[in-house]
Length: 188
Image (cartoon, rainbow, N blue to C red; front, side):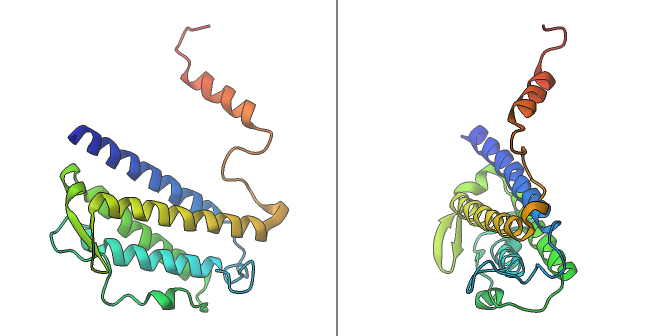
C-alpha cells in the first residue's frame, strides 16, 4: 500500500504543478484591462478566479505546509470566502502575486505529505475527510477553476490566443517528435 501511496503523491504533485503551468500560461496572456472582465453578467473575471483560488489554497493548506498535524482544520477562521467573489480593483501584478503565493502554500503542503498521512483525518468546515479525500477534492476544484480561467482568457484573446497545448493540426508532428525522442538508440 505504501508504494501506491508514494506513486499517488508523486503523480498528484506533478499533475498539480502542470495545472498551475496551464494557469500561468493563460494569465500571461491577459492584457491589463482584461483582469476584471467576465464573459457574462454574473460571471467570474480572471481576478475573481485568482482571488478565490488563492483564498482557498491558503485556507485549506496553510496548516499542512510543514506536514500533517492532527487536529488541523481545513477552513481558516479568518477566511472571507464571499469577499473572494467580489470584483475589486487589484492590478495584475498584485493578483499574480496572490496566485503564486496560493499555489506555493498548496504545493508546499503536497510536498510535505507522506504516504501515511493520506489516511489521516482532516476536517474542512467541521466535515471529516481523509487527507486523500481532501487532496482529491482540491484537485478537482482547482483544475476546474484553472480550466475556467483558460476558457475566459482564450475567449478574451480571440485570434491572439496562444495555445497551451498541441496546436490544431499539430497532433501528427507532436506524436512523431514524441516517438522519435523515446525510440531506442540504434533502432530503425
